[in-house]
Length: 68
Image (cartoon, rainbow, N blue to C red; front, side, top):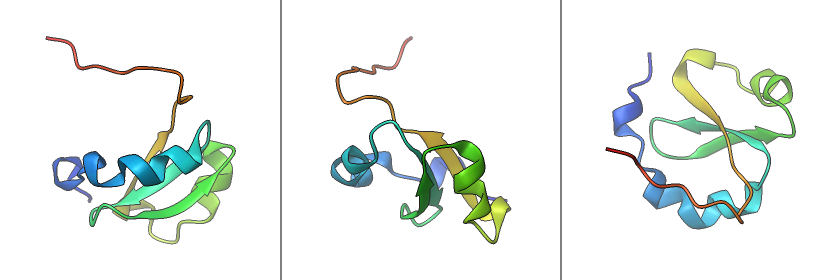
């Protein structure tokens, strides 16, 4: 099982911009290993589904900030 705390999204900030409005699969080594327009398309590309986390990259016009 992947430990999401080991993934450093700040390392991927520039690369994630290329995946606007798409789903990405990210490995524990903080690498994008698959992408697609839908969750299902992205999952199909991943052979070891328990070794990645999946997330949808929001539109670049959105601003996300953690809440307290």
